[in-house]
Image 1 (cartoon, rainbow, N blue to C red):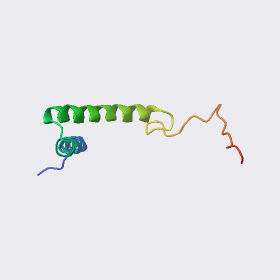
Image 2 (image 1 turned 45 degrees about the horizontal axis):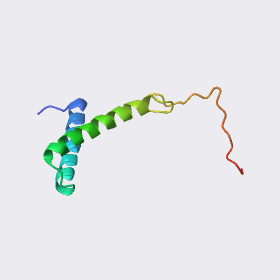
Image 3 (image 1 turned 90 degrees about the vertical axis):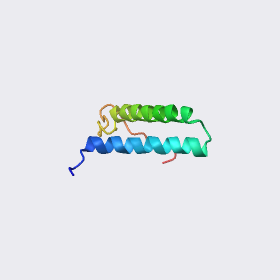
Image 4 (image 1 turned 45 degrees about the vertical axis):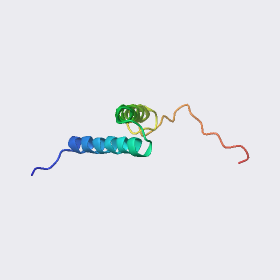
Length: 79
């Protein structure tokens, strides 16, 4: 048995999250499986897009050091 690559692990985790979300929507939310599956996939897609977008912002994962030139830290009122 070989060692799993990180890409396979990520796919398995995403699959587990999607299946768990579908189970919650069907059994707890009493939704039809035909509604739960597309909703779970849409939630995962939107979440992935938002995370990628946030990572590109200053101070995000891909840019951990926000720009400091031209910015000043203002003191909060009353300090």
